[in-house]
Length: 160
Image (cartoon, rainbow, N blue to C red; front, top):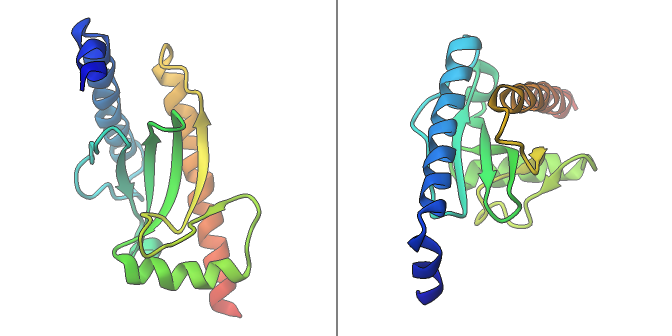
């Protein structure tokens, strides 16, 4: 606690954290306003300085009880796209289906019952917060590509 108190004393951590959370809310609004085919249900989960995220869904994913999470990982200091299920049973079900046809492009959960994702992919590593428009475009492009790839993978699994 002494280290935490010392780090917080100058106020830099609080200002940076507040800026990140403000950006996350803007990013969620950006998806809501610019992609009517994508739902942004719920609110931003601010976390415990482990991760901050919000979920995105469309009819395809929603019908399968899945969504994409846009996650900021404090550990890796990166933005990630996660495929997540509405609960641990759904995560495990899809993890088993997708794990068999494992795509090297993704990191698979080691335990979908306990971890919050089925697969994840880095969208932006070491983000540059000095140009938020550019950062948003990179996150948007990666997220839209991830949604398309997940839909293709799931359709292939359903056909087989």
